[in-house]
Image 1 (cartoon, rainbow, N blue to C red):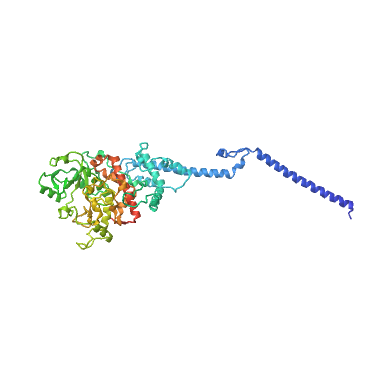
Image 2: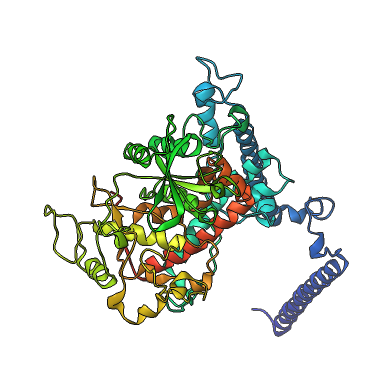
Length: 564
């Protein structure tokens, strides 16, 4: 057995060992903490603004940066380079397209390039190019801002980019292509927002009384609205109707034939128009004759025109607007300078005059005082037939209030008259706006009859004997300078259906380019109205009225009728 002394010695030894081990652990912890504090205090700091690629490269005692920070930076650089590469490719493709667009043409409408030979790969290259410029998915990264920053930040990011002389023709095409590829979705979204919530963008004032106006949305027309004109160097400078191999698609061959007749045919006779002393009916042909019977004979064959006053020049604009909108209800008209010796002096001196084709098939009433109508029609009867939606029947004499005209014709007439502000047809009494004291409706005291709707009648409501179901629009010299805050909305009263094609053209943003192309065919009109700048002002006036018309169609939920 162990003695008491041995037991005490063993216990003391264990206590000493425990104290020594605890002392070593404490010293070790203290040493490590001290070392950590020294290391942190002596480590060089790196400001956030110096976090560049060169500073992030591992060197010396900074090997710890080889981890996740470097990987994130490299991933971002790779994404940026990939997007920038796409942007560069897109601009290169746009440049190639611009070069091809301005190469001369050869027969058949093909571009004249060295590879356009039989059996070449031109068609394959075209397909590859189309694939190359396929619009990428929209993103908001730096590359998107880099590739389109010049286009979006430029003040010419609008319809008038071609006006600035700083851009070449190729650059204009590139800008338009980049805009169409990267911005069409924004335009569609803007248009949808405009259509779905017009109250946030437009005035909520009531219709009529000149209180209904708004700012026109700036919509970018698509590339298919590109304006094309014939090369004047290939045309006879003596020709006033500039039609190349093919007329604009909205002008028929019959329209072109009549325009050339009115613009260049020799005047062989003349005849007065009853109750219209300032107008003159003239016959065209080869055999000169002063006999009125000879003029009537020419008119029966469609060889007559009606010379109007110089201030009626808007009649020519109305004809081209009618064709561009797809209505096809007005008569061909041109501007012309007359020099025939058989005409009165005032018709051969002074500014050019509009001349309208005389249609021998128009049906007139036998009443001399009411011969500007094919049938009598009052305002109240007109409103009643609109409510009944009268359409064509087999009955040659339809029952009142119907007059045998298709219901859709009245919508075409209302749209046409509103855009031109023609008041002498549906509202000759000026009941829908505040007339100036010099207006004929005020001087002739017609405006006073607005108090009694039973006395109001419509004028210039005409049809052809060959097709009495369709209207013919005559006397279309509206009001190009009519104030926008005094527009006549009474013209649209009772209308519940408007032509679909006309509304589509107004919505497309192509009205200006198509009217410029169409009016350019009439050389005398083009030059007399100040060429492009002057005619653009006229078109912009009609475009603003068209915007108001579209709002009216939306607010009143008018139907879009088919074109017949």
